[in-house]
Image (cartoon, rainbow, N blue to C red; front, side, top):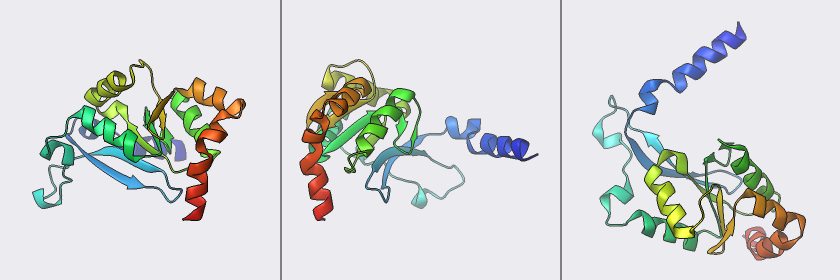
Length: 169
């Protein structure tokens, strides 16, 4: 009975109306310091005054400009499938798991929600796969490279001043 109820609830939360609605950019910060940059569906039953607004839609900023700003403004930026709390692929999950070992603030964007953003990130980094991890404005690589850097101690060196500044706050 509980399994059936859970299944029904999940279908209700992820039904076709949510998947096919228009989407707007939003963001929130998790108590652990993880910053999620994502989209939410617009609800046609909600008054226009309460719809989220898309700052990128209302500005002249291109997706390339947004990627450049993300990478510049966030000490650790991850373009991934899903969000850090709910990765939607094993490679993204691995990268987040390794980065969280260092207790640094993470910022992330879900590339599944926006194919144009996905293409802009690929073009920006000249790298074809995801996740893509940037540290202090520099493209590091995907989950395999992040794991390798962790195992050989280089990632600790890259992140030590970011972790130290978070503890000082």
